Image (cartoon, rainbow, N blue to C red; front, side, top):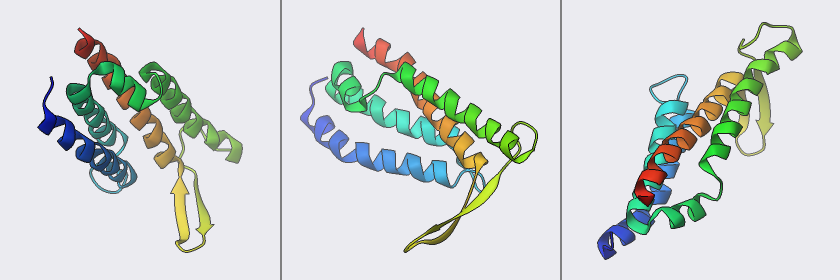
Length: 137
């Protein structure tokens, strides 16, 4: 497609959609959202980009192969489950900790967020692995 309006709108919408997907990821375990819905919104941002600019430009803007995102996401999710072993808990038990960040105060972080980040990467990778070859056709 060669629409100037779509290209300009996409340049404004891509960062907003990605920011919204991160917002959904971070609020996921206490309210609706999480890795799956955030990943779908993030993937839709790149799908919109592919409609406006084509698949090769989208792959370049993404910077990594979608299959690499799948592998990285699976490793992150597996790593979140294995962290429990280091504190003597069963696999996939939630482990929580505090991090003191200057200017932000104490942040309570846990392995559910790490697992959600893995799901986020897998969903983006799988979705783009399906959609980008279809756009290239």
